[in-house]
Length: 94
Image (cartoon, rainbow, N blue to C red; front, side):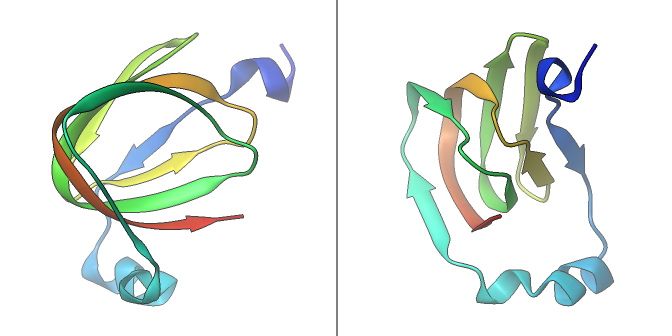
């Protein structure tokens, strides 16, 4: 299995120290209402969820996350977002 076929979303509960080290509060904020949509990642995205509840469907299965989670989406991932509770997140690409 190559890196491209094993695209995996990682979810963690970061410490306040890690959030400060990453400079999360300086990242832009994205908000979205309850909805379902297709998405593909042209580059890696790391985001920290301030609010919301989401399940993302990938070829490898479903991944759920929400408020307080630090989530990394790999470059090349194609998925479907199912926003169950409105999202507010800090994000950074690259």
